[in-house]
Image 1 (cartoon, rainbow, N blue to C red):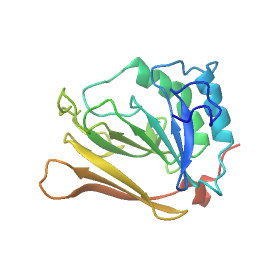
Image 2: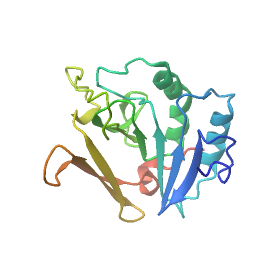
Image 3: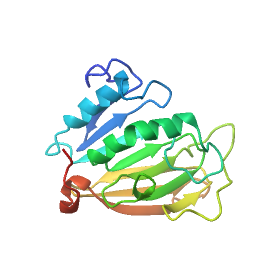
Image 4: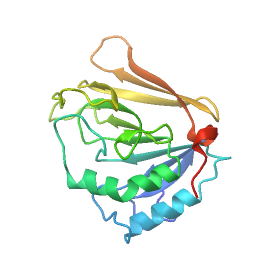
Length: 200
């Protein structure tokens, strides 16, 4: 894990660049408060992103900040990391937050502080790769407005960066014998959206 190359002192939080995307890995189970090494590293890392080289920014965290499944609700590792770090990711115009923990798939709208926000990241729960515990197949009813698609099936996702401004996210259910796209969305990079100019 390239933690030293990104200026981190831990393999629990680090970043790297890949094909026009700045990828940030964050730790749900290590100190994340504003006086922590992880928080201070994240603040510095976000400030150094060169959008001319990496117009897309993705964050990856284990525990979800948004989740309409009935499992893993009101967890410290979710609620406290969200309270500590959500504003940092929003101000830096992070495009997508990928999370796991919940063994199912769910895609949210662009969101910040619990409400739809066109300049916030899309949150995607992609904890559906398979495990001995089985699927988390119980959802809250009614479905929250911020949740756009959810399904308790094993699957996998693909994030294809087409160019500086557009990328395609697809989710593929693995229950089918044939390749089948169950959910998809075209995304515009926030760095290219005039309405979402970077915050200082």
